[in-house]
Image (cartoon, rainbow, N blue to C red; front, top):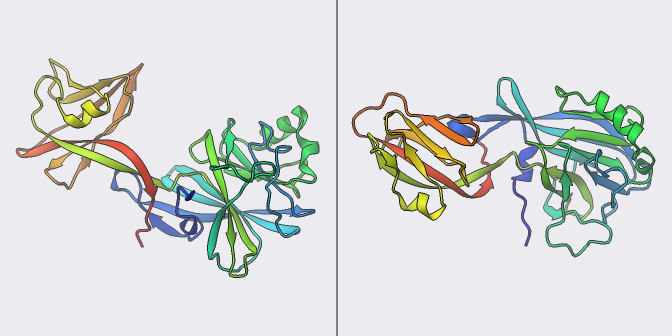
Length: 296
């Protein structure tokens, strides 16, 4: 059974605070993007710059007519916003079931999703949008969609095409029908997986670190080589990591101080900073993900 990566009910529950990075909460809010009109109820989703305007339509029909477009916006830092999800809202009815949205001709696909290659997704009226799948149309949309915008409607077809940035960028993203108690579509949501938090496997290393490679079973299992340089007891580095570990310093079991990484070419380096007697280095590797939880 396919399950959403994020808690879809949480995406548009804002304003709400959720778990973030480095023990700092993220603020989630909902931003309106106007309306588009579905002429026949046929819906298209995808990357508008790489075929999303004329690609396969969704197998399930939506109610025809105008529909509100909304974005789930996450503030990761004062000047850092991301689109965690996009929604078509057909009614005010509560969602009682989320069903993965499949495409015409691929109803039996195990994990139906669309690929993003230009950092952008869209909802479109699948009846009228294909005529806008041209190079000239893409140039018009690109000019309107500057880097400071989270989303916009297509200047040439504002009543039929809504576009938005896709989370942290390119990837493969799934879309979900939110059904009400009668089984009718109340919402259609694309999850950009911003509200997915890693599941960590961790180990603790005593400080100060010995010179050379850190010998831990965790790092060996994942083929990650962390080293303390011979002439520096205050830094740890990793050359071409298969997975980038999370490093934190503190007393065993926490509370922890997160160490920020810097990159030079293929080398990742962390600076330990001042440490106190009895503190340890916690090394963690992501082994999966889970939906973020609300904090309030």
